[in-house]
Amino acid sequence: MGDLIWFGALVLGLWYWWRAKGVKEIATEVIKRHCKEMDVQLLDDSVVLRGYWFKRNAEGRLRAWRAYNFEFTSTGVDRFNGRIVLLGTQVLDVQLEPHRV
Image 1 (tube, rainbow, N blue to C red):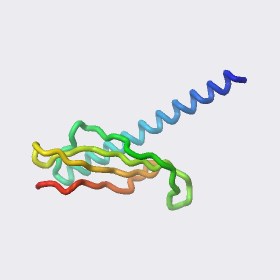
Image 2 (tube, rainbow, N blue to C red):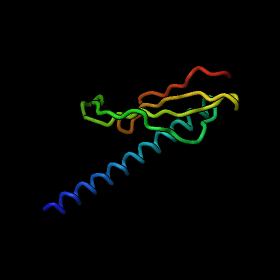
Image 3 (tube, helix red, strand yellow):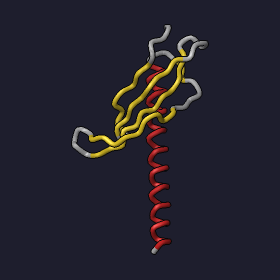
Image 4 (cartoon, rainbow, N blue to C red):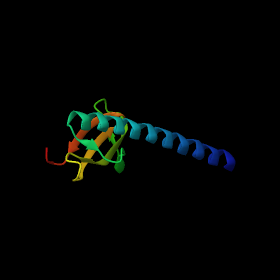
């Protein structure tokens, strides 16, 4: 019985990792498009998870709320911070620090 519990925990952990990886890829793609539209450059082509919580969506279903930080530049010299917030796979907000154009 103990082996079955460990196996179930392993499967659950792998499922969570796979799902989190997919959500991070969605966030990265949205940020790349947003940076292109705003005429800024995403630095390091990466986002970093800064917050994780559970919240309800508009239908009342419990979803994972994630906030990712990233860095961008508008001049090629200065680094600025940005943030993207997702509820499940739905993008709720994208914010860029005030920057030079």
